[in-house]
Length: 193
Image (tube, rainbow, N blue to C red; front, side):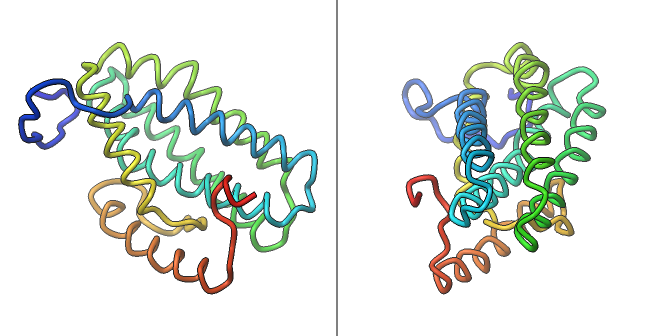
């Protein structure tokens, strides 16, 4: 029985393929730190801003859907940790919105992203790794990556940030964002840089 309350998967006859949520989040954090470095070096580059906004929006959305609920369920004191992270994510979404609207505030955003990455790396991910079986971590990683692809590419601080509603609303908002991105030819992935 899963410690993180995931629905069962059909038997696969072996190991579940995919990466652990810890590995997925750590890789995304490295990508986000690289993007913040690029933004610091060229704060007026609209493509870098656009890709950072999209990448960070998708990342935070997926964390809200799968990482924080897993922490709530599996980690002692997880409710407080998840609530703290959600509050910090809300502040980051507000900063992202400001960056997207005015182009200002990148310094504050860069520091917020660095704090987010450090908090996850030093506390949240190690706790999750200790408390959750590796098979469940891989299952969470698979769901996390799927949620990220369906997530909005723009900050939407007013949308629900906890399940079940964020799992319903976020993909719908994500479709609208992606249509807008195609119409405006907006860069949303690092490969677009």
